Image (tube, rainbow, N blue to C red):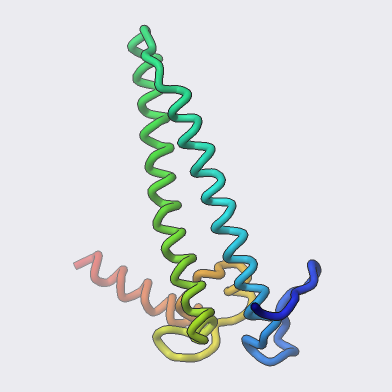
Length: 138
């Protein structure tokens, strides 16, 4: 597959952008994140199936339904996150990972480390959010 990345490795601005080590670092980071989300989803499904009993007290039942609804909403957000992770992995495969979709410029390594699914540089993201705010206020 790619380069072997040491456990303590952190991408640095002192090396060529999106070199083999950096690409493999972000690939592993994304895959681990996806695995964690999938594991949590399996645990949630198992928990929801175990809790599938009818509670006699109306307040307990309402509380249980609220908890279940919140949990399912969180799982839906995570499902969307998995599709963003998959899209980032696809960008790694096609060589476009790490570059801003709007400008084509490199996205900072600090931003990618904090948000490995980022598709916009900080500047482009800020412009996007300002435009979004203007449209929302109309």
